[in-house]
Amino acid sequence: MKITYCKGDVIVKVAFLTPSNVAGGAERVLTILSNRSSEDGIETYFISFDENSDYYSLNKKVNFIHLGVDSSNKSGLSKYLLFPKYYIRLRRYLKQIRPDVVVSFLFLTNIVGTICCNELSIPIILSERNDPLFYGKKQKNIMKLIYKKSDGFVCQSKNVLKTMMLEYGVKDSVVIPNPITTKQIGVFKNIKSKRIISVGRLIEQKNHKLLIEAFKKVQESYPEYELYIFGEGELRQELEQCITRLELSGKVFMPGLENEVIKKNNDAQLFVLPSKYEGFPNVLIEAMCNGIPSIATDVPSGTVRDLIVDGENGYLFHGKNPNELGELIINALGNIEELNDIGKNGMDIIDVCSEDLVYKKWLKYIQTIKSNK
Image 1 (cartoon, rainbow, N blue to C red):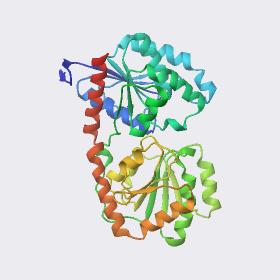
Image 2: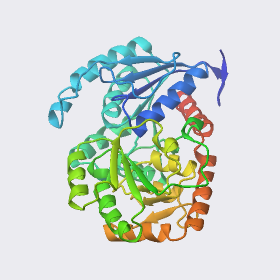
Image 3: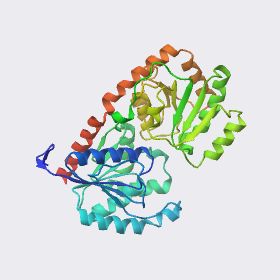
Image 4: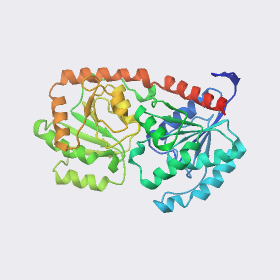
C-alpha cells in the first residue's frame, strides 16, 4: 500500500520504543499510534524493553517485540546497571529492522534509543511525557547530555517545550497533545450519581492523600457522596491507613485497576485530579470528553491550564491545602445545574484531542524528521 505524506510518496517503516506495555498514559498513546500507523500500511514495530507486559492491545499488523530484560525486582541504581543489556539487545534489533524513524517515549528508552540510533544513523524522535522540572539532578544531567542528540522532540505543552529548549538543548521540537479515542467515550449521562472519582497510580505524584483529606471536609456538607480512587501503586497501604484514621471507611473506596474506568463511571458527579505535577493528564481529557465536570490542579507544566478555562469547562485548583480543595469541591457541588453545564462544555475538548487529528500531527512530524535526515 502506498501512502502520500507531506513530502513525496514513500512507505515508512517506524519503530516505537517503550520500557513496558503497562497501564500508563505514555503506553496508551504509543499503542494508539502503533495501531494507526500499521493500519495506514506502514510497517510498524512496537518494542518493549521488558519480558511480557501487554496491558494495551496491539493489532495483528503491529510487530510486537520484547527485549526480554527483567527489571521487575530492580530499582534505583540496580535498574540502571541493566543498561548494557538494553543497549545490546535494542541495537541488534534496530540494526536488523532498519526503521526509517524511531519514536521513543520515557527516560530509559529515550537514552538507550538515542545512543543506538546515533550509532546506526537512524533518526529518532523523543517525547517527554512528564514535567522535567521534577526530575532528580542525576537524571537531568543525563538528559542534558543525550536529549540534544535527538533528531526531533515532542512535548505536550508550550511550557515544557520551552524548558526542553532552554535547559536541555533540544532544537527541532513541536507540541502535540495526547489523543482520545471513541472507545474511551461512553454515552453522556444527564443524571449523575452521588460519586466523586479520581484515577491514577497510587504514588506520591498523584497526591491522593490530599484528596482523601479534602473529602473529609466535603463529608461535613455532603455526607451522601462517596469517593472512588481507581489505580494501584506503592502507597496503597498508606492511603488505606489514612482512610481509616479519618473514619472514612465505607465512604472512600480504592477498587484498583479497571479498564476503560472513566467510560464505565461517566455518571460520576465530579472528577478530581489532585496531582502535584503532570506531563499531560490523559485521565482529565477522558473525564472531560465523557462529560464529567472536572477539578484539576494547575500543574507547573501548564498542560492543565491549556485544557481548562476556569469556571467555563472545568475548575482549576491552585492551592496545596486539603481544606482549599475541600472548599472548591463543596462550592462545585453547591450548584449542580451549573456543574452539569460545565461538564457539557468540557466535552468540546475532543475537537483538539481527537485520535484522528493527533495521529495526523504525529505522522506529519515523523515524515518531516525523516525528510530532514
